[in-house]
Length: 585
Image (cartoon, rainbow, N blue to C red; front, side, top):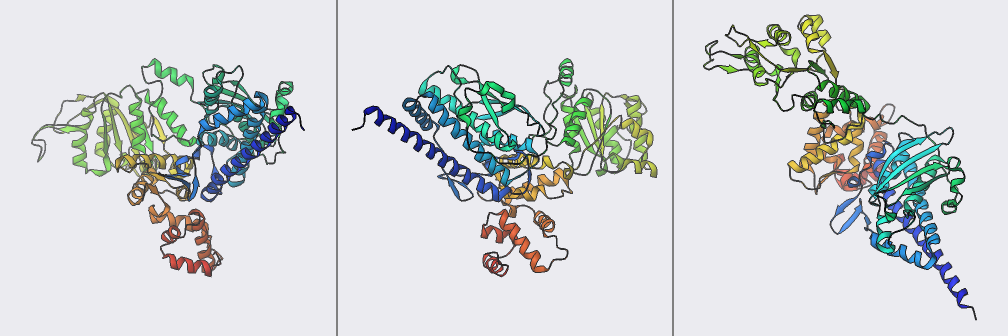
């Protein structure tokens, strides 16, 4: 007969083994369902970590959560906290820490392997950022990257993470009360496993602060094994796992931070320390960030500004941004389209007139310059004004005074002038239609707004901003873009720029069903554009082009036949026949 201690030892060993196997199976299934769907929706893109959005991956239909038909179940963190307590009670805190750290390490490896295999990332840094981003989307913790450094040549790695609202620390406090040591073991394991797989190096994270031991937030630092040196000797056993596979991509520069000097200058002038946003959406492109930085600096002063750029790029939006961040922000912003009015009417609009000065002038009229007193006037399509009005505008700029039509007494004005044009002003000056001296007066500061096709990083944030905007305006709660739309949005040339994007989202919102915007809800020109880009029709037969196009649409709809047929403009029966003919069944 076995001794009771031997029986207890066998029981604990079996419990340890079964627990570890169950946790690995749960992690595998979770990552399989999530990454399988992402594979079908976003495969092949130069993705950035910030582009991952939960609402575009998961369908939150009441009573059935799914990833495009694959069902999900929300996990109860409190139940996991009780499981954590059982591990500590039965095996001791050291063994429990090892199990949960290894579980987190395996989880991080699995996520990194899937993300690296499925997506084409912009660089290794973006792939490393995707781990904290995905962890946040999964609801485990709000993961913020404080610092990230990685040298692929030497293998040197350093990453600092801030963990806000850690569910692991919260449940440890609830089940096991305050701890003397950090307890976010799964978070430590996950971060270590993810970074190790991405860099093909041994990376280990150590938790520095933890809410479970009384700190305000949880935080951790990760380094490569060589950089840690002997500091890891007591805990490295918790991280040991299977060999790591992967490839290292090149390192790119991180986005520059806004200078503290500008914030100090704004504070000195009594302006908001944080400038008002141009859009609810975050501006990500470096080209447009440079424009915003210039606009922010220029907003402090009264210098005249000339904004150039294609139609629909947002020149008036930029002008309003300058006004809102200027000392004139609490005064009027008056905008006028100079190309929309004939000369006689435009002159009266801008400078005003005296009663009886011309037929129909039955009252005195205050012009827009006087209405904008102490504020800002925005003159759009400035190259469309006549030479006569150009002379009067030049006087307003030089002498700070205007004449109403029919008056001989000048009126002093205190107005900041911002002008805009979508034309080539140099050509207008050469042809003699636009005064060179007026150009120099207007273009004390000149800004060129880049077209949307040259700032691709801003397409998705702007699209999501417009989706949110029209959801409120049209009263469509929870309106979202389906992930299959992303390829169409990212690969369209946008000749109409931001205005065209806004109109496209408005149209899609009108035709959306159940609060989801699918590719077939977008303007037909989008579908044609992606088809032309992917068909590469030269030297191909009509059958080959048709087969490639059908296969492409099937991939975007994750194999949904009815939606594929709708996008192609054919019946489902016709689609099935073509699938059989093209050998795509």
